[in-house]
Length: 339
Image (tube, rainbow, N blue to C red):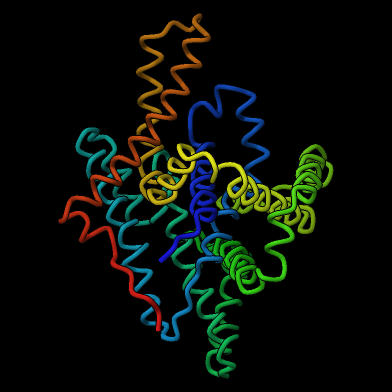
């Protein structure tokens, strides 16, 4: 089956943007911190949009849950437990904290990014329930869909943080947008994605929105449950997603080395989420021990190298895991096409 390279590249960009704020350089350099503040608006919605775009509908809910449990939830849990065991072994004082995190499923420090696969899993299941009711017009399924919607609204309203339930409403929203766009892409695809004039207009619009983002109350941080002005925030998200897709298709897809890097990042997304926040801070500490604070240029080079090496090492872990039969059988689910 021919893969959509634009989607693969955009997915790689989204995972890099999602991890950028967890790197020490985001706090070290004001320019990167400012850059990240502009990207935080759409970086998580971008990944969710892509997930919705790639969403495959299963008539049977049980089959869908089994598919997503094996393909998303189980690998995430295995990686989380493995990291906890590894870190507890090298740092005994971490054991109590690890036990608490495993029992409450509230992550912090280097495992904070793992909220996302858990939230994505439950968001996908809820979205399937809603979509199933929409597609089948069954009264019974409609009741389940209404209950699911009430549940996500209540979870967000009361900020139920167990399993990050308060985030599901955002996940379902952007999954639905991505899925809807896929269903109607023929109406807009050629005109929007291939029109450079539209690209320049949207680029200018996004810059304008970011310039006035405080005035317009444009804010979005899903895990922190922050959502600013609905209209301007969603408009900013739409502009950001469009820009990434346009650049992926017309720029990055034509530069083979960059294309390969971003596609690899997309494939190793779960491993990058899991390991980057553990690897990079330690590399940062090592570089600061050997490079004097007065050597600014060397520090900048070292920090860039740390970023590249961290992502590269995460991808390498993914490749080794995929090529090791025992690990492959646990972490990589052999997908079956829906009926």
